[in-house]
Image (cartoon, rainbow, N blue to C red; front, top):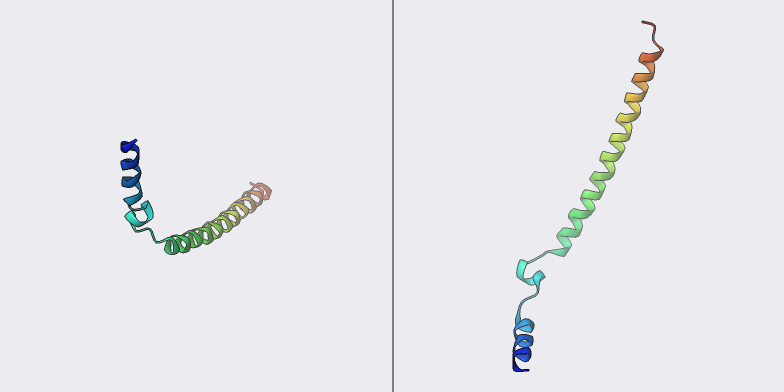
Length: 65
């Protein structure tokens, strides 16, 4: 019983992981927002490139050889 109480006292006195590693949640949220915006821009660029490549392939197939 004493060991359980002592273990409880030790765990309650330990710092939380957020405190121990000094995690800045606000900065992390801002980075996540920027990464999502970048992912969206890259997806739009990828879609544009796919469309352009398809148009080029189609025009090459139509042209006489």
